[in-house]
Image (cartoon, rainbow, N blue to C red; front, side, top):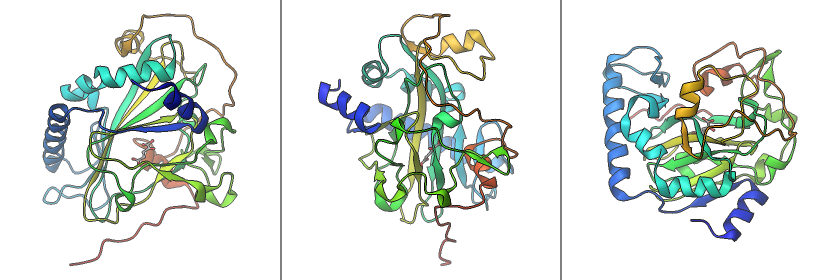
Length: 293
Ligand SMILES: O=C(O)CCC(=O)C(=O)O
């Protein structure tokens, strides 16, 4: 459980890191399941519904950038989405209307080449009727400065929803040359494996390439308050309600004004944020080729 001070700090800064939330057994099982998913990627040659691949992936040397929607196909990640110590924190941060899992993904940054993620606000991808929403980053490895930890701009969740378009289409990233926020003020969310970060849906965040010799695997869950309804609509009402990890079903959205830009027209490159962001003209994060050995 969080202290009142922690909760106030989250609302003030738009993020929080809580050490040692995950127990060793669940962490071990999550890592083992992920290892198996990565090993199984040797059988695919292009992006699928499960795998987003790093450039240079081959069956002989599998390179996975993202596992998509792990809670829907690998039971331990659904178990983890319902892990009580985490859900209790979410109840404290998201308010009394319940907690709904919206989506999940695992972003893998392999040693020396794991791809950067350009600056963005999750809210730009999925505006809702209110912004009591956040992403949890479950650290499956230690996250430290050199392995490309998630970085956040403190206080940015209280500002505008920035332009995430390029050439007239959504691209899921902010153009850094517009200098809309002070990117130099970014705070890296570091911690030991088993720690969790929580960032508000409007907090500007991104992450650099992994330049270390250790992996950075981050399991991300996106959660919303039970009464936050997506402005882009609900495709499957039964699934939407199955994803409530706390609280009761309601069909009454809470509507709180917040700055919105719709992610339309859709990004020309679909499948993952990495694909969406390829159409961003000016990149912030360097992409270095790994040293040849
Ligand atoms: O993996 C990361 O470092 C950032 C991921 C992220 O922000 C996203 O996938 O929306």
